[in-house]
Amino acid sequence: MTETSAPVFDRVAIVGIGLIGSSLARALRQYGVARVVVCADRSEAACAKALDLGIVDEAMVDPGAAVRGADAVILCTPVGAYAAVAETIAPHLKPGAVISDVGSVKQAAVRDIGPVLPGGVHFVPAHPVAGTEHSGPEAGFAELFQGRWCIVTPPPGTDAAAVQRVTALWSGVGSRVEVMEPSRHDRILAITSHLPHLIAYTIVGTAADLEEETKSAVIQFSAGGFRDFTRIAASDPIMWRDIFLNNREAVLEILQRFTEDLTALQRAIRWGEGEVLEEHFTKTRAIRRGIIDARQA
Amino acid sequence: MTETSAPVFDRVAIVGIGLIGSSLARALRQYGVARVVVCADRSEAACAKALDLGIVDEAMVDPGAAVRGADAVILCTPVGAYAAVAETIAPHLKPGAVISDVGSVKQAAVRDIGPVLPGGVHFVPAHPVAGTEHSGPEAGFAELFQGRWCIVTPPPGTDAAAVQRVTALWSGVGSRVEVMEPSRHDRILAITSHLPHLIAYTIVGTAADLEEETKSAVIQFSAGGFRDFTRIAASDPIMWRDIFLNNREAVLEILQRFTEDLTALQRAIRWGEGEVLEEHFTKTRAIRRGIIDARQA
Image (cartoon, rainbow over the protein chains, first blue to last red):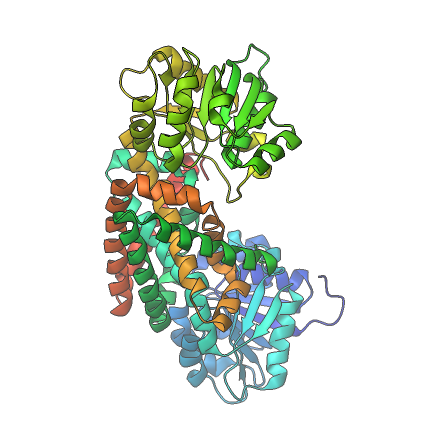
């Protein structure tokens, strides 16, 4: 995946140097996608850490200063901070710069960032479908995006050359890129990511409320399925709060379907309807086979 | 883990040669826990496969024939088959034999197996907390139980020497053994295993009912959390049907708590209550840390 050709961008500014931002910083330089990478983070400790790790050329608290002269600016903050960050950086953006982000909801990104930007810059939202349950600049690694999808969601009328450069950036760090409408992205991710996280957060919370003796046994014998949920439910709380608040309609819609289906299975358990359970459990195997065939397993 | 001392049992009969049964057959011989391992399975193809794989000394369809002369009999069928299998084998059991099982529910095992057995044999239910989403004799492997818990749940009055031998069997194949009451086991597993499986089956079923175009996108972009659920939801349908039917009370009780908690989060999303979400998502991280500290992650 190492690029020997010219970098896609000369100077990239990353705003928010957490798990995704710091992984991107590492990857941009390691794969030669950018020549200079600077970052802004409102945490001075995170800035110091990023410099200490040697993953950026410069780090500062002020995003307005960080984006000056940058050919590309990638927002890697929680989605809830987008509007404020966009307003702060808007006056300092270089004419012709490409603005992008890595957020897990895309209609809200278009809503919050698009209107604030000045004319003459190009806004191309994107979402690398990659991550771990760990947080902070030290949790990142350059290989995080390798072989993973990045979904690019340009609003209608976006400059084709800018879309092309964002696509080249993500291909350069090893991702497979797909372009789709923001609303379609949000519907699909509500199912593949947002609802699973909500469910995992819920079940782990239910366990956390158990009396102490049962809770310690649950931790001890967690290997039977629960452990996988706790990994998911250890993800960054602020990031996930903002995802649910900003993809409300799609999450509530799929959650309603899920609740209906769960109620049907609950009823089958209560009334001892074995054939209903068996039929349902057999159907779900087919989806797993689809994922294995799509080589996503 | 290789044992060089005398085997715990001379001759062991395994009834049901699927993932767990075939893993146990492999492990018993590989670690020298048993000298001779025979199996019964109602599927002739599974018997032929077990012989072909060389993991048992003898294989036959009739469980009554398989248990003749066995010092230990381990039921590895779905829980729903226990009553019928116990009745079939009862007249053929060797006096003094130890009868055990590997089922994920223990009160039902005591209920279905205990009363059918003749005097002079020892019933010691057990549950190795281990498994994969794959099924059948070819899916097993000898290392499956290494470092995993096995929960032994002897009913009151069980012969101490028999409990000791079952403990030695599971220690011999690499497990850590814990003894507890059947009802406590069922309550704990309802949370750590049964509810997570029910939830995973539900969410994957919800996705399976989506219109075709969305469904294929869900499969393509499954890496964001959904993929973990599909792995869990690919587990054996008959086995899981029987678990839910036989641990009904404990599953319905924890499911009720889960539903209340999910409804509270749903409400917070609908009304934009960010601080409720953040507080909940922060709480669940503590449980993950507990699991990491318990070295179960």
